[in-house]
Amino acid sequence: MEAITAEELQKTFKVKQKKKGLKASLATFVKTEYKEVEAVKGISFQVKEGEVLAFIGPNGAGKSTTIKMLTGILYPDGGRMSVLGLSPTRDRKKLAYEIGTVFGQKEQLWTHLTPYDNFMFFGKVYDLGEKETVSRIEEMAESFELGSFINTPVRNLSLGQRIRCEITASLIHRPKILFLDEPTIGLDPVVKENIREFIKKLNRQYNTTIFLTSHDVGDIEKLCKRMIIINNGKVVMDDAMDNLKYNYLNRKQVEVRLKEDAEIKLKEGVQLIKNKGLERRFEVDTKKCQVNELLSLIDGDNIMDVNISNIPLEKIITEIYKR
Amino acid sequence: MRFDNCTERKKIVVKNPAKKYYYIFRVSFMENLQYPLNCILGFLSYFIMIFLFFQLWNYIYGDASKVIAGYTRTQMIWYVIFTEIMWFGTRNATLTGGMSRDIKSGTVAYAMNKPYRYPLYILSKYFGEIGFRFLLYFLMGSIMGVVMLGNIPAFRFTTVVWVLPVILSGLLVNSLIRICISLLAFWVEDSLPFQWIYDKLLIVIGIMFPVEVFPKILQPAIRLSPIYAVTYGPAKLLVDFSFEVYRQVLLVQLGYLFTFSVLLLLGYRKGVKKLNVNGG
Image (cartoon, rainbow over all chains, first blue to last red; front, side, top):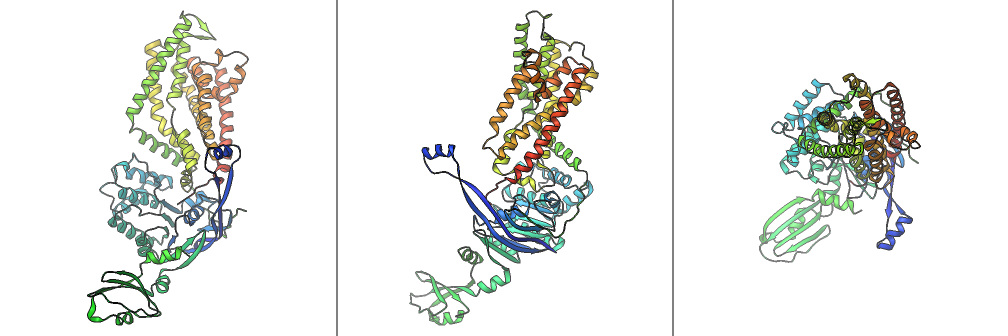
């Protein structure tokens, strides 16, 4: 069964318009003008159970609006959607037992209580028995390494500790789908890695479907097998990460440090993107020109150092955003 | 056109729905036990208010044996002690500014994908927040009254048992009114002015003076108002219990509980459809 199905989802917001100045402010008092903003313009996609999907796009693309429709927070203006066979708008309460959500900087924990008390609270909210909740807390405290601060009030925790607790709280009830909106924002690399490992384990062990939005390319690269990119309210790309890499990573970056300044004649498929002192950086389209062909254009005795790397995924994504 | 479609509906059994709201109340109660100093400092304001009313009514009565609007001086001051307990012991930003802010900012949306109903969650949280404070005010206010005035004339402890459901219903009616006012934030820029109007009506009509003090022409309207159910009813019954007044107050309270519950349900359902949660 498909975990998530979205067909031609649409959402339009009415945004108040006000011209600048005192006169305009007074005019607004009498007659308010609105502008319609189409945040989502007919998005369609399906997510299989157990999939780990990156749902990304530039700021204002419509990704958070889409997640909010899928989790029942917003009502769509058009289209169809179903999550685990349920309607997010009509069956919101039933769906709540099956999904977990972690929304960026939105806190859901009681700040003056300890994480342990918070987890017990969420266990009750999701109608889990006490023994089951305690066992779940112990399991996740070990996986997430929460032991050292599980009995410290949340307000005294660091950001990284707090976010780990936020994610743990959203997993108490073993949701079938986990919606993560910027889960690693503001975290140090070690903690980010811990969280990524846990999410991977969650997916492997329990076949939890992961629906991730993130601006952190590391999250996307290390967690997701498939990526949907949206921009201006529409899907611009929906493909497996392997295909993405195959289609876009035919380009390589070659950095060359010369011993002496020299002019290098370029050929088709080679682009010079940096020329500073004795350093040259080329972008090579390997469909048109191989790396060794480029290197053969340079006098071998004049080469001090060569570094060959893939085009960063971030750059690929940025180019797709600009489409 | 808004619509969505599902090929299959799952049936999920929800266990003990009331239990989770009790737990929300309990956790909120626990969290607010972290603020004992707030309660104690707040009591100073209450003490000053009662002291002022004590002096005021002493001056108005002049002679302790005088009766005004059916109240002796002792009964009148005890009335104000209890109505001020209802005021000070239940004052809290959760149902007013807090809820209004949640709606305006869209934070309410993040409660919508939890398996509880936001208005009931807020209600449970609120009662947890005021629980300890209200009990403390009730105890301290009663002790203060006994020290200043002696016992309530003709008071029996069994009266408290009868009046307890009236007090709780009064608190609930007050909470439902405040929630309904806060729901206006779905439609207006700021619902706090409406809270302010309700506060002032409560103070003038329900706290400072019993209904009997007002001109006879206004009394029927006041007896039908929710303020009669929130403050006057419980305080009057504690000070001068009668089954006739008890039946009247309970009837008015039940009427308002039903009315405001329906308003809340309809208002919330309509309001969430208007929710506009921008940004990621």
